[in-house]
Length: 445
Image (cartoon, rainbow, N blue to C red; front, side):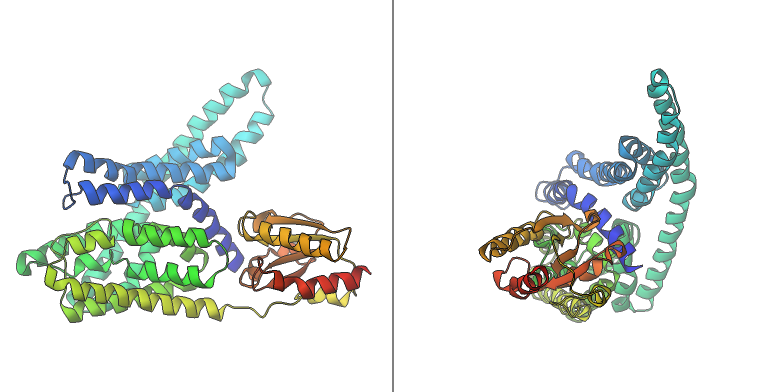
């Protein structure tokens, strides 16, 4: 189950990170041309709105469908996503994440087998007809089925949040808000629930804390910082996400990381609760709703006397999310730095000739680690070793040993259980390979 969740999270993480530039564009465009931006312009501000509600869902729908069903899957994924957008545009991204893969799989199952049984002269015609029919069916599923379901889920969430706010349980609102955000419901929460209630408070007191509940960038920044400091892989993604979250105000950058490790939701909830508590105690609020929730727009919409309370709330929420996130990651820490496949040990001291260095993408630490290992082996005069780098989802059959970092060991697929596993603290540290080289020399003679 854990590996399935990680695979799903990685699947969406690759897609979201591919389009991170569009999220940045939306954030900066809103800061510049939004209603409360530096250069308010209603016409130009519509661009960022359409980019978020239409362009990004369609791109996600295409990419998800294309990954599973090729070009045909991508086309069907887009058509399915359009049905969702028309039915409920505020749920477009979440709908695309569901319908895109569905379109890709349906294209893979239906279109290609039919084309393989069709005469070559008719294949293009048959393919286009099947795309139209299958895309239309998936589009109707998005419009008539998924849009109402997600709309009902949003309505239930809205009702629960309104009860919490009315009963003065505002600190507990993070228990609902943070998980909903990770499911890409953040804009629905902000614009459909918190903004109308917040505007009422502004009319009464001139500011509202409700504008801070979903937009506070502190929890996301703290979580990304914990990943950046603790993890030894994907550091560039975490660092980029940290900048985009803080300055661009785009929460979506960290959602895939949480989807792949759901226990990190606890860190987000803790950060949200601490931040909301600080905002409530200091009595701060914003004069108007903000979107996106960047540090820049946050302080632009606050009164000068509220700056200390805002800084305290954001910093405290980031610190809480960082601390809990670090704890969640540390609990997962495995006893490593040794061979952990006991089955292979029982078979005896078999020689090792084919070694795979594995990381998330197969292009970063694993490549550097493999190169360093080859260099160390050559210095010892060891011959006959085949050492290559691989992504975790592209490990070939025939390897005799897998080398990875210890915080990545539990992500190795079950299909690799016949291979020995050597887990290290750091793949790019030359001091890490002494014991491994000694062991291989001993086995190979």
